[in-house]
Length: 172
View 1 (cartoon, rainbow, N blue to C red):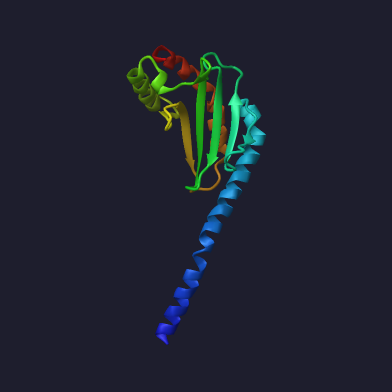
View 2: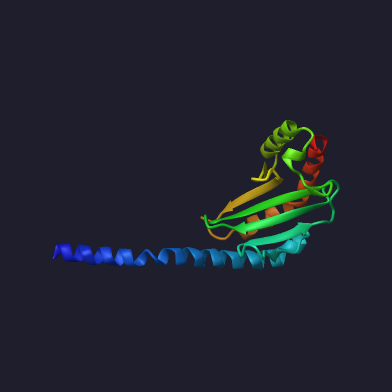
């Protein structure tokens, strides 16, 4: 009898396993829709940006900040709902006709050192992607639920990143 109960319990557990990715997708979809509502409500007011869903990745929203900037020509903003229960902000400043790229900088070492310094001094961290384009970023975990107020704070902080682009110019 004990073996039969054990086998039945094992069968129930195993039958539930294929449903786990579906639950994760449903949660990610729900977070994406909550983020869409937040960006529609607060993006234009808090960041001065209208966001749209990416055509390349359905879990990304993209916008461009173009007003009120002194140093950057624009800031390309990509906000992602990840499969790791986080929301990631990546903000790529455009300067002198394109991305700020470490390999194109006249002082690559100085630029990277200053990016590290900015990560220590700033609300957002700085880095570069796999093509060496520089960005400023923030990652929010969803373990305590959907963080609408945190998203608003990050949105409000995005225009402030322009002054740090000004600090990068001597290295470019």
